[in-house]
Amino acid sequence: MGTDVSSHLYPEASAHLVRVTEAGHWLEWQDWVNPILETPFSIKYGLFHVPDRPGTGLAFDREALARFAFG
Image (cartoon, rainbow, N blue to C red; front, side, top):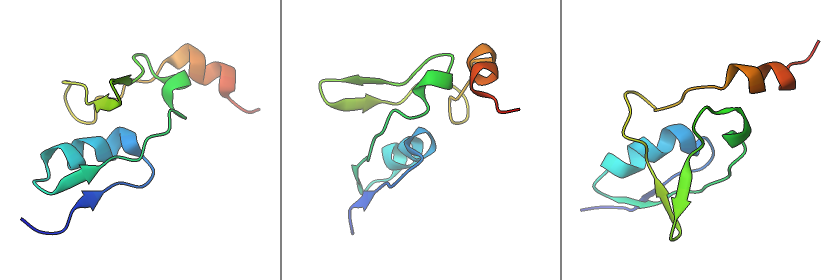
């Protein structure tokens, strides 16, 4: 084993890395991106559930993106 690995910012991407890292320890989570995702990430019993989708599992809600667009 070794040093515990944690994340800081961008949990949507780093969750996958922490999940597959043998020394994965802690995921810092903020739901800032949830309002613009097709399927927001879920937290159950205090645990972040990494979606079982290809890549980072991110799919953006285009209508939500348009509502938040500048200009």
